[in-house]
Length: 215
Image (cartoon, rainbow, N blue to C red):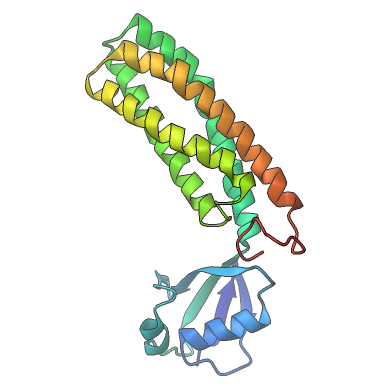
């Protein structure tokens, strides 16, 4: 029977017999989890488990030496934190794009320029991934999520055009896309991320059509 369970880096005494991960999940869910919270990660003796795999959860027997770690998050909190990252990323990218675009016009074949364009593309991919993550936490069909998702679709188009110009080593086209297409979109993404964040802050359980999944 497991003796040590850690939730959010805090050790929890286990006063009940727990033989496997499934029983641990059931006990934690009924004892420690607030409404709207979800288990997002389970680690056994330092190894991440495929949480939700019933055979694994039942099949792995726990001993007194076993150490189970659970990460418990609230979709509302996670979406707010993720939108923070998206907004900060958008602002950070915009701080460099103008100077990079100038470099592209003046030195259209410069290797350093194309290296920096590649970094921008990586950041765009990260922003898109983070928006997808938010869409897993909120109701992406909700009217308040529409502006962020509209920007998401436009970012995909600009990314593809920028990738094509990058592949052709077309520095001036890259510069034009950075300044005229990407920069305005990033400003919009930063603003709309903040607006969605404010909306999530104000969303309560009493809403008939809750914006945040499970909240």
